[in-house]
Length: 217
Image (cartoon, rainbow, N blue to C red; front, top):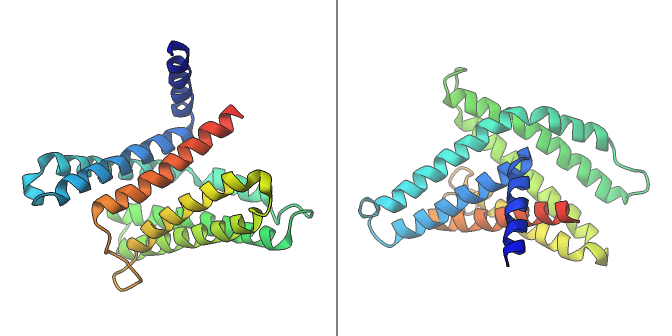
């Protein structure tokens, strides 16, 4: 039992020592706070649930923390896109072009979010709303392309479980992405905080599991 606990502690430390691992942990904690805080606030009038409101405030701060940290992700995304290029010739053409389109959407996402953040922080003039909407649309597009690409790859039985988990995580994130779009678009703005937290926590835990499993492999 002690050896198992020590192994888990070591894995957690290793996870937190990497940028991606720390982002996964902050994301999971943030959505967990939103899930719990939203559930507490939903049981009573928001003003009557100080703990729920505190957890929702913590969730918002952790989300902002991730937004600031993503200011430094452009170059790593560019390096990945350049390395992938147009994809390996031996790969299925449909999967290849879906992956290229996915990389383009991801690459464009970052500057749009940076502009939204800069407008909110009064670093630049202008309305941040349009940039937040555009970055959310790019995120949703990336998730859809990722789901389409994984759907093609899941024919490979050896990777079926991993691909199914990836699709499940992308679908959960896609539901939240649509929720954050302007009102009138499908179910935009209709999710209560606890449901946003549940979907985000689900996709985050899948990401943490995949990160840990990948590192242990």
